[in-house]
Image (cartoon, rainbow, N blue to C red):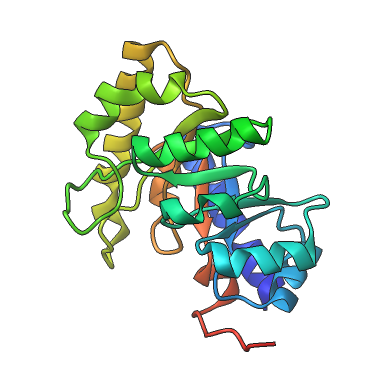
Length: 231
């Protein structure tokens, strides 16, 4: 079932790319493996999944230690608490969810001590909802230069999670807004922001049409989430 689902998701991404006139290799799929067993991840890996996204450090670390990183990439896509930064330890090729300058500074200090550079995305709260993580749009635009000056991190782009809506078309304006913010930030700061991480299982096609370079898809591949067994 995972193989069939993955194939279908890829085909839908490909069709959305074609519909929007974009280059075939312009979008990468992040297979969201939170609350998914090692066996399921290995199955997805065996049929070509190359990037896996985890959203909790305490769940991700043992998985990565068991599965490794040969020929695959791990991305951290969930809310990252400042006190969990010390557990990153070069495990993730990209962190999608840097939502404050203070968090970026913590990552910067860690990476400088470890003599490495961590690629990150800045999480933007495009809807303005108080309950959402992420920086408000004006903060991102004003402070991008501060992020870019930090040593030990490299800002690759932006990420957002719009309000959940059963109609994916209602996400379009949020995705379009993130793309516009990216364009303004690039123009104002002269810093290239190559990545736009947006779109999940219910709305990734709309996200692709609006310029996503990374889509985060889990339940459309693995099915509804179930709590993992302890072993």
